[in-house]
Length: 223
Image (spheres, rainbow, N blue to C red):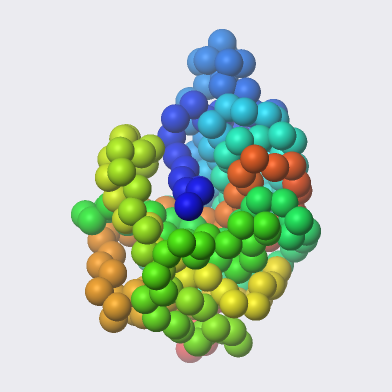
């Protein structure tokens, strides 16, 4: 399958609007694109092909537009990102191109890259993999999968690590995601998680052009 990995090769820093170009980033001495903005953590990464215009907006919002990219991923969330219920809304009309909209993050020890996929375009990330189970959560059904990446970029440099997936069977753009439900379901199928690293509501594009405008927030538990 095509693996939508991310992080920390030749990214550009994000402070407002950024046209992603590793060459220009190197010229200006810019560091990889992670940080905080209006109380939220953000991450923005590209492998350097095509162009991406990524804009951090008020609170948990961001906009993105990409043209002829190979692979990019970006969004806002939390670091660290322990289990929480999040709400999101916005626009993501990329059903006819290769793109994901997902709650995306990492753990360490073990090193795991995970996706709760809310919508995807022309490529289903479960293609060629074996379904491990199903979870009912937030008004929908998600299928659970695991894939492995060998000697690929990660938050700890080049490494071998597992990817965990919950893929929503009926796509949507907007709603709530109770991440604890997914983490519990994964562990029941033998998929171990480690120490929480970051968690973002991410837009990702692969060999495509598209756009998104997303806003996230945390759903606080009532007293």
